[in-house]
Every structure is written in structure tokens, then in C-alpha cells.
Amino acid sequence: MFFGAASVSSLLPSVFCESNSTVLFSCQCYPMRDMGITDILRKVFLVDLIQGLGVTFRYQHPKEIYTEQYPLERPQVAERYRGAPRLNVNPDTDETLCISCDLCSVACPENLIVVTSERNEKTRRKELLKFTYDLSRCMFCGLCEDACPTDALELTQDFELANYTREGMIWDLKTLEKGPQPTVYRK
Image (cartoon, rainbow, N blue to C red; front, side, top):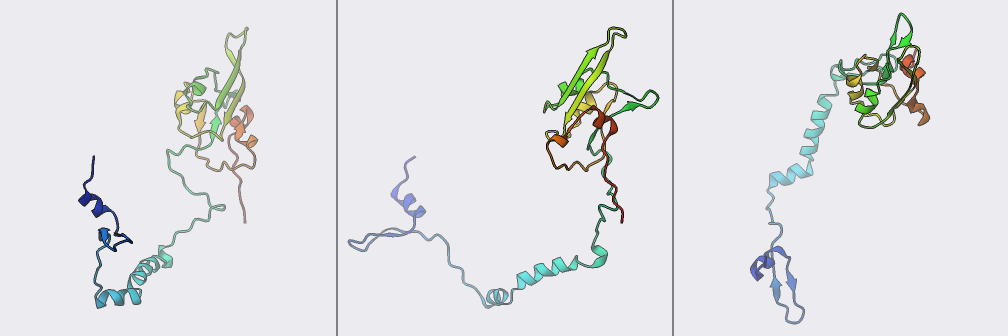
């Protein structure tokens, strides 16, 4: 699209030609606004700032403040919160409920679950050898939990997952069966 001289001149600031001091094109970018005495007084006495601080200090009253004493009192999380994973065990036999079907690792979009199993020739069932869960890549979507047919894998409501090493974020079978062990703080 070709702009005419009139439309280009309205977009550009004033440019003077030095040879004959004529204006090539001009525009007024910001219209000047006349400030009244009330506007000047509002700026000098910082009325807008004082109004904003008034709103802030209105909510600083001690009855409005809510502080959680976090390490000593654990906060309530939402009922549907998905946190640290756990492999459930049968309380009677103390054996994991996982049947090594590998559906959780197939359902995981991050491919962070590795299930290794071996078929037992006597019982003709798969036996779980190795189960690893990489928490550093997990987005806690719950698809692995939904895919498990025996409800062996569960995302608990534990949220304290901080660790000092990356290797500590890869949980093996024993760690998953034990579940997360949150630190208990005392006075």
C-alpha cells in the first residue's frame, strides 16, 4: 500500500530542511493539556499516593492479618490436591499392589516412570523387580494414578518435596512404598 505525502507527514515528527529553513512535514504527537489549579495541587500534595497508602493501611489492622505458623502447624491442602506419589501395599501380606502392567508409564506424558518386571514361571504372573519415579520431571497431572487398574499408584497430599540433589528426586520401589516422610518440627 502506498502512503500519500499527507498520511506520511501525519505519522512523522517535524523535520526542518537546513538549506531554506522550511518545514518538510509536521505533526503534533501529544496534545498539550492545560492543568488547572486543582491538578497542580493534587500533584504537589501527592493526593493519589496518600489515597493508595490509605487502602494499604486499612488492611494492616491486626484482625485482618492471617499468618500461618507453617513448620509448626501444617496447612490444610485442597481435597483434590495431587502431591508426592506412593505405591500402596497390601496390609495383610505387606506386598505391593502393583501388578507390573506398565499402564502408568504408558499414560505418563513425561515418560518418567520406569517399570521393570519378570514373569514367574511357577505362578505365571509378572513380578515387579524395579519401579522408578522421577519427581524432578513430574507435573503431577494424575494420569498415572488414573491408569492404574489396581489403585497401586497414588498421588498423596504431601507437598514437601524439596531436595538438595537431583538424585534425591528419583524415587525407587522402597521409597515409593514407604511414601513421603515429612519432617516434623517442634519448638
